[in-house]
Image 1 (cartoon, rainbow, N blue to C red):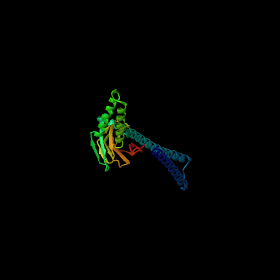
Image 2 (image 1 turned 180 degrees about the vertical axis):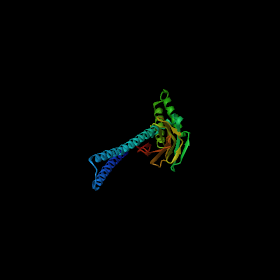
Image 3 (image 1 turned 180 degrees about the horizontal axis):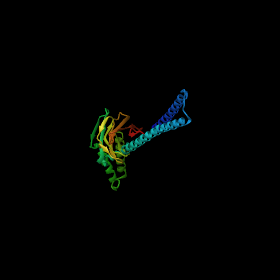
Image 4 (image 1 turned 120 degrees about the vertical axis):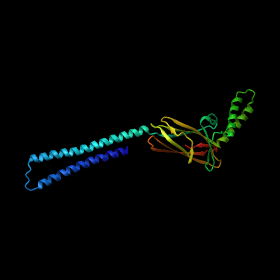
Length: 261
C-alpha cells in the first residue's frame, strides 16, 4: 500500500512539474515578444498565440496522463497475473501423543536427531514405542477382564504410566504440515530441517497440503533444542519464494519434552 501511494504521489508531482514548466515557458515567450522593438503584433495575434499555446500545453499534459493511465493499467494487470499464479506455503505443527506413531504409518517419517544434529530417515517404529503400544492394547483388554484383581490392575496401570512418562522424556512426536493457501501451484519445493534436506513432494497445488509425522529423539543432556524449518519453492514463472519457521523444544519441570509456545 505504501509503495502504491508513493507511486501516485510521484506521478502527481510530475504533472505539477510539467504544468509549472509550461506556465513559466509561456511568460518567458510573452516577455520576449514584448521587448521586441517595432512590435506590430495585434491583440488578435496574441489571442491566436495564446490559443495555440494552450492547445500545446493541454496536449502535453493529456499525453502524460494517457501514458500514466496506460502504465497503471499495465501494472494492475501484472499484479493480478502475479496474484493468480502466486503460491503461499505456510507451516503448521502440533504435538501429538507418542502412541499415534503406530496409527499413522501411512505418512510416517522417523527422524532420530542425535547431539551432533545428524538426521536419519527410516520407516521403522522404535521398539520401545511398539512395546508401549502393546501394553496399551493389553490395558484395554484387562480393563474388561473380570478375573483380574483390582490390585493387579492398578499395578499394570502404574507400570504403564511410568513407561509413558519415561518415553515422553525421550521422544517428541510432532504432526507437521505444509499448506498452500495461494492461488497458484508451488513447484520445485525443497524443505530443510536444521540444514538437512527432507524428502517432500516436489509440487503442491493450491488449497492442498502435505503432512508429516516427526518422531524426534533428544539426548537427556539437552534441555533446549531448536528446530529450524526452511522451505523454498517457485511458481510457473520461476519466481522464487522462501519461508522460515523456528520451533523450540524444551523440557518441562518433569523432564518431559514439549513445544514451547
